[in-house]
Image (cartoon, rainbow, N blue to C red; front, top):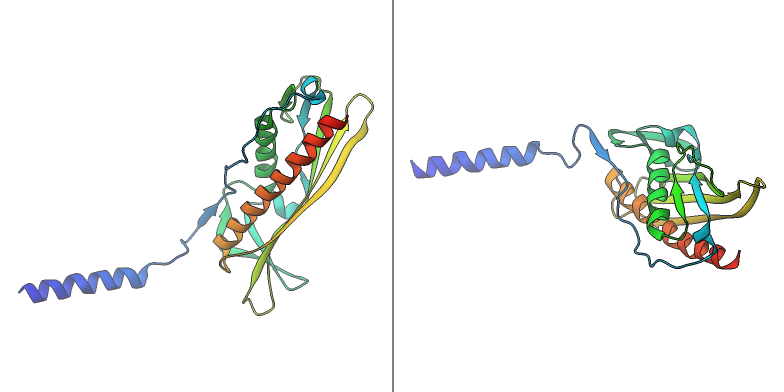
Length: 203
């Protein structure tokens, strides 16, 4: 009788393992909220207010669909994964939080703010994609974002720079792509932090 019970339990466990899938029917992914640590520094920017404009990007980055590319021209979407919040909105919100945490400006406002500001930050998402080789054996991500600070009094560009982070994925799937994109964005935030601090010291 005990042997029969053991056999029944093992059979159930094996059937459960066999039916499980590493990818749910609809898996929602988002870019991590982790931000680099900063130390507050008093600079000329501390007297200026900053408004963060919505990111500019291609339509695919404003969609909840998760896209990936194969080779130079083919582009597809993951059928079982999607973004919780599209990359365009997510990156804008995360950069806003990142700038507030840096504590370099008098205040950092989002695009909905009606207050008068000294500077605005315009962002262009040039690339935020996972790429596969022709055989689907290897994949990497490419994150490219251009930051432009605009003087709202003269409407001239205060400073501009493009940042890029290209990383291999740990796994060739949607989850591997999300983790690598997250790391790429984190790298760009760290690099841009040094650049922004330099601007605040030079201007």
